[in-house]
Length: 171
Image 1 (cartoon, rainbow, N blue to C red):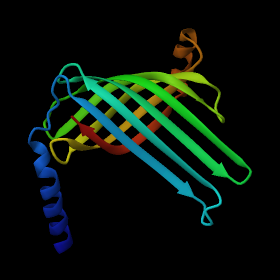
Image 2 (cartoon, rainbow, N blue to C red; image 1 turned 30 degrees about the vertical axis):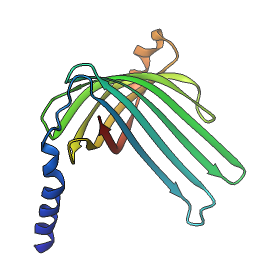
Image 3 (spheres, one colour; image 1 turned 90 degrees about the vertical axis):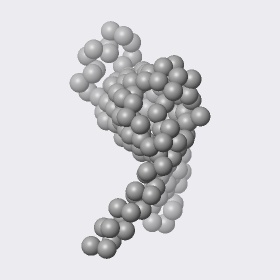
Image 4 (cartoon, rainbow, N blue to C red; image 1 turned 45 degrees about the vertical axis):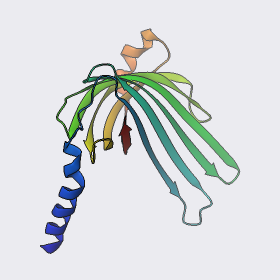
């Protein structure tokens, strides 16, 4: 019981300052960063991914953004990398400390282990401010791959979900 009370108190202290001035304004910019990785127990085989995003609010609810992701695999005798570059548009539901959003993105997938192709799809997420300039980002994208506009309609049902958890900064 004391553990639950302690967690509630700590979360209240950490999250409460975020309520002040957490609303995005026209002209605000943001930087988001996320990453993950894994290694075999002997560290002889590893993989990691990083993603960075840069956004600009042209209204207090609409944000243009660009995201760059890189995935690297390091194995004995075989190293490879893949990347994606995406442009997106997100609509934020201005709820002060918690900023849910819906949007869409389109971009290009490339690298050693993938067939180079376009990708697009809808996305949804939440930005939870921990202070007036810093937030935790959680999002999910549904991405489908296609080679040209005629192919996009046929490929929508064969997409994939991409999850993201990271940190962001607004200025």
